[in-house]
Amino acid sequence: MDFGPEETRIVGPLGGIFDGFEGFRQVKPEDLVEAVRSSTVALDTNVLLDLYRSLKQTREENIEALHEVGPRLFMPAQVQSEFWRNRDQVIRGVIDRDSAEGLREAQRKARTVLNAWGKQILSKAEADTLRNELDAAFQQVITKLRSGGHGLKMSGALKDTTLDPVLQEVEALFDGRVGLPFAADRLAELVQEGQARFARRVPPGYMDADKANQIEEGTGDFLIWEQLVAHAQATGRDILFVTRDVKEDWWRLGELGSPIGPRVELINEMRDRAGVGLLLAEPPELWAALSEAFPALPTSQSTVDDAERLGEEADIDGSLPWTSEMWEALLSRLEDSAYPIRVAVLREAASSPEGFIPRHRVYEIGDYDQNRLLVGFTKPIIGATRKLIADGELPAGLEPALRAHYLRPGKAEGFLVPRSVVESAGQAPS
Image (cartoon, rainbow, N blue to C red; front, side, top):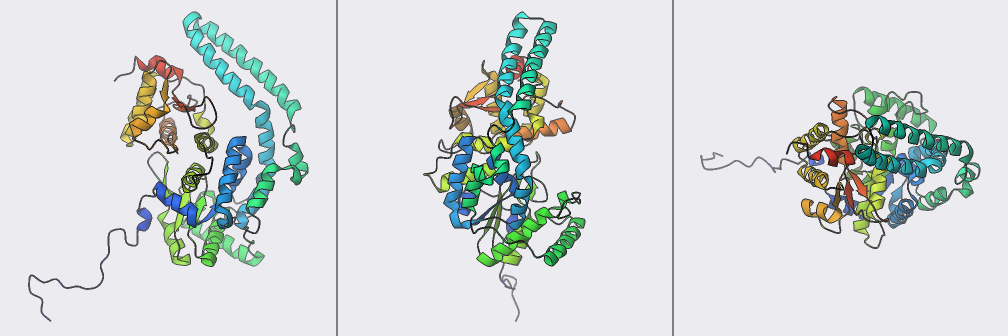
């Protein structure tokens, strides 16, 4: 049959630019809200262990939220194994932290006051001497407390699991919801398969390939993946996997290291093998999504902030003051990375005599819904700071550029920038 110049031959069904590449679509908050309502929700080991590290209010709110997921919770056998492997060490760390954290906070506040007064009435040498004496006094007390303060709260849990309140909650949440471990011969096959995938940099898990001294020879994440796929095949439900392990072998990462979404290869593999969808979430995103999906939950902004704190690294929690040049380098990097709302918030806070910007102003600048929880707001700022440190443009050990400020538990009253930023703001170029 001949076609004239005005006619078009239809050769078959046509598709769109995202067909077959759906994994590149942006994950929206409403996608996570729908996922917590209907998908299988699996928590990585670090999320479970964070129940020990969290503040009391955070832990209680998180556990209540997980009960809403109920029978759709799933624990891969590999997560179970890693939980028991690391539980004792985490509890010891909590005992250590609880013994000294209050004093550390008092020390930080005392340093802030001393720095403010010292610049007005003391010479630099006098201020440095007093600061060193203050630090030495606090350290002496903390050392003595740690030597005699172990085991005041959680030591009983190490000796008797029935005295572990966190474990009791985890047991209730996952009763009948833990996957069975692979048989020995199948496990050996999967370890070899995982190592072969790592050699080709096939996600997930290749970033842990150097952990060959572990029982699974570095294939722990791959084993979790295989158990997630198997569970999805059995249930036919989409998978939401929650982890604070933000690495390139699970996530597509942005320029500042912030996660964009799951690796497209993982989305495709889950669809091809199990016929279901895959989403990843960090813990703060999970708690915010659960709060929106189940409005009766008491999830507060401080709970989301506590979850974000647990995901932060120590290199952004120093005491080194900022200069105007350092501050402008950070703002410039954020502007270049398309974070204008963060830049506007930082500039307004720095222009305040107290270095404070109230919560309602952040919502006004960002045009956010007032009922929304601020999830990940400081993450790009942390990422930009870390990137500048890695590039040699900022020194390590700087004070955090932006911190949530609370007068009481719940929603943050606002955000604070360091005093050093306020003091140098008048010298900074506009």
